[in-house]
Length: 254
Image (cartoon, rainbow, N blue to C red; front, side, top):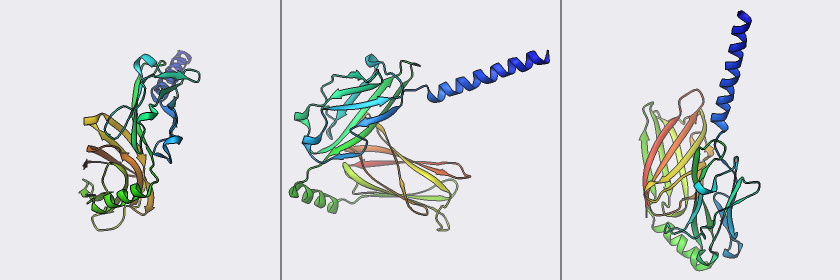
């Protein structure tokens, strides 16, 4: 009788672990991107003919999509989604006649053939304009921008200061500082993540990991605010030995 109970317990234990693994790894997640997230392409001629994303599982093309949007939220792809590379990669052609210097957002949504789950996300890339006039325009835009800055005190008495400069559509610098109310830096931070969403234009989530500059100070540079409008920016501060801090900032970008 005891041996039967042990055997049943072992089977249930194995089944439970197997189900847990399926839950963790059962979604189609991106592995590689072309262009890469936050990549700056130095010339229009260097822009690839296609956007290609490879996944951990085979996507169902009839329920999956890739859309490439310019800063005016207009599609610049040819809407010709294809499955490549042993059925685990999706690609879509770009209409190169519509590509100009600027920031582009790639929205993707995938239905996994393996488990029927849907995953989605967004990322950005940019095409540079190396002309002297464009560089001057960017400099002037930075000079007249007021930027964004906000302080928030969390329930466990941590002051988060979040800043964006110049706070415009395109490339920005994001800075975060975390201090205790007595003014000392929060030392037990493991990682700081940013998640960008623009629900009105169906953009996001676009995610980024901030770089540590000093104790309690983190920074990141990128084109994550790819269009004008109101962005929901979620800051997640992972702490060692403490709960994560989750704080959302609503930022208007002009």
